[in-house]
Image 1 (tube, rainbow, N blue to C red):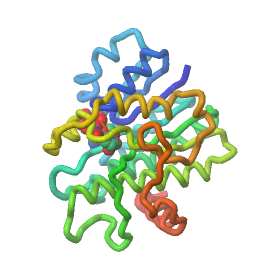
Image 2: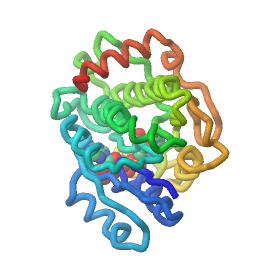
Image 3: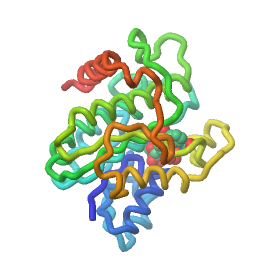
Image 4: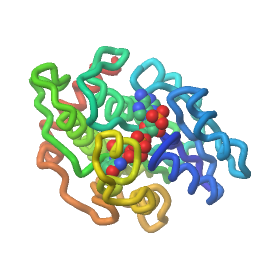
Length: 261
Ligand SMILES: NC(=O)c1ccc[n+]([C@@H]2O[C@H](COP(=O)([O-])OP(=O)(O)OC[C@H]3O[C@@H](n4cnc5c(N)ncnc54)[C@H](OP(=O)(O)O)[C@@H]3O)[C@@H](O)[C@H]2O)c1
């Protein structure tokens, strides 16, 4: 069975996915922001019968993302960029001085995919699954870091659209390499801390989001499906900017600059 890296495995959808993967015999690289947070939330899973290994790194630090990639073995079948922060609260910056939601929700996954690319290709058939959202907003390239009139919902939505744009680019880049890339909206307002913390009444269960995510991660029928954006289990249309090749190029070039590659 596969080796799967799940970022943000300490809570919500990521923890549910890690638990299901472990129960199905996968080697799970369960990611936590720190060793302490991982032990506190994943103790049962780490000590259980499955092959679950803790990998750590605060995604608000590009240096920590690089250190996280160093903990990943040569064999990697699936990368799930799931970790994220919601829209509650004011403007914050990452350790590198970037707008925090852009940095954690998108840029960390961008760098991780680049650092793990060769391992995924060597393990092909392999997959990259970006857990994005139906909440999307076009990126204003004149103010990507949202310094002017910050709005948390906008910060969240642009980071989620960036993930989808990245998935489309990855799918094209990895065509013929046996590595697929997809993005999805798992479910609307699942009962997780991201939703309840923003004062929103949950409208779906983590189980619903898990089913949608599981398909892209593990369903053999989707082994060759690449480049799509899924709303739950249905292929859907993302924000128009995702289909704008020039916008994707601008985002890619900016991201490469920001991660220093
Ligand atoms: N909930 C929804 O209805 C919904 C809808 C659409 C899309 N999504 C997406 O689904 C994904 C999972 O969300 P969720 O609802 O399961 O949220 P959640 O319960 O809040 O879990 C988020 C996970 O990300 C981790 N994380 C956040 N910041 C981090 C950082 N700086 N470094 C390392 N890890 C970090 C959290 O770690 P800690 O446990 O340490 O905080 C946690 O494991 C997100 O990408 C979200 O945007 C969710």
